[in-house]
Length: 264
Image (cartoon, one colour):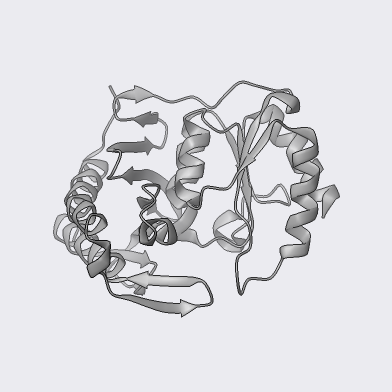
């Protein structure tokens, strides 16, 4: 059974409450209002409603904690040592198109260090959780990253720059190098779930550039607590600062880091 701190229990309860409404929204997509934040970058009323539920529930349970959330940005709290980092729907484009691959992502920082993480797909009812020093779990099952070490055997997740984003030429060079050496690449459209799947051993590795803190905060902790290695694409621990991330087991991480850097 996973160790669940009081804070993580609060996060789970908030995610489940928001997830119940999100499932209803997913079944009534034709009624959702959609606005555009930028080229190929959308926000729905479901994103806004889910964020509101999460912030309200977590604020009631942990008054004074700060927030970094996708839609509202920074919300200052009286308690400067704790901050929730929230993506209400990671994979909004999937959600809008009726693809059941999206998730609520919640990370909790204490004095700048990630201590609790949660990634929840309400459609599949898969709840990935991690507590610093206590491992990572899918529902009640302990997670470990895959042990495969040969590039020819592995499947790698990634995310491609879409309309309006730069970096496409560099990504295509990286993609070509990884495709040529591995058994496959998957681009599923939710960085949070991609990282959770690395923790679960479904993906052997994942890399992407220019992500936001709310996309990856919970997933970084999940991979680490599942025995994996996470860094930015310069090999540093600055993923939340620059948005670049590579996650894998120790052996693959070293190999892929070199491959991706040389391709660029």
